[in-house]
Structure formats: C-alpha cells, structure tokens
Amino acid sequence: MSFFPFIDFTGPFIIFAIIGIAIFVIFIVIIIVILKSIFSNNNYSSKTSSTHQPYEPQDPTQVLNPYRAKPEKIEKEKEKKEASKEQHKFCPFCGDKIPTNAKFCPSCGTKQ
Image (cartoon, rainbow, N blue to C red; front, side, top):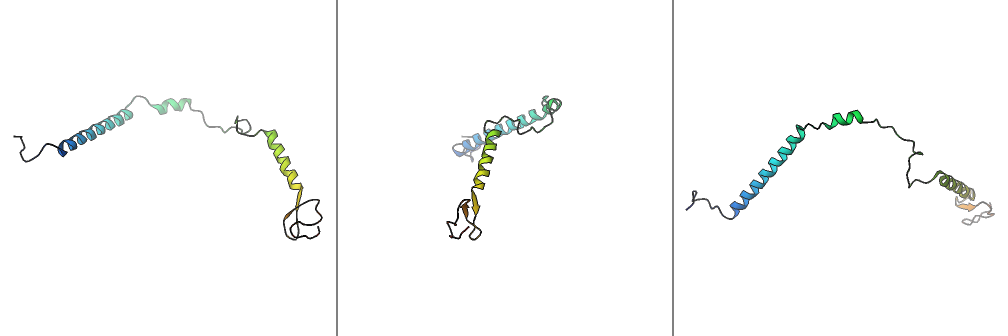
C-alpha cells in the first residue's frame, strides 16, 4: 500500500518525472553559464581595445591574391578586346556585325 493510494506511480508518471528532472538540470546549467559569463574577471573589451588597430584599407594592387590576374595579362586581354572590336563594323541598314573588309553585308546583302 502506497502513501497516496489514488495516484499510480508507475508508467507515465516515472517518465514525466525523469523528463522534468532533466529539464530542471539543463535550466540550472544554463543559468550557471550565463552568470559565470556576466561575472567573470575576463573583460575582453578592455584587453582588445588597447591592442586594436584601426582598419586601413589596403591598395588592391598590393594585396597578394593567387586568383587575381597579373597586370600584364589584363593588359593583353584589353588589347585583344580592342583588336577584336576593330575587326568588325556594323551594317548601316540592318545593324548586324560585318567584317571591316566586307564589300557586302552577309545578312541583308546591301553594298557597303
């Protein structure tokens, strides 16, 4: 005979009791961690403020980036683009690109 005859202390009651105790323990651990972080002697803001250097943007040409194209290669690509632009002109009638030495437009057939 139990102390509370109208309550059955088996089955679901034991499971709920274990879950309740686990939640309580987790809650206490969280409270301890929060209080420890608030009242700890490690004041990181005072340590970093004296050694913190202000941000100064660097010259992008001086930054070593292995993926950045070298200036010589960039200049060569620009020259190639300019050369390719000079090899074509546009038809005044239809607006298509045509070679600079073409006498007739390949699209509309008009004389250039």
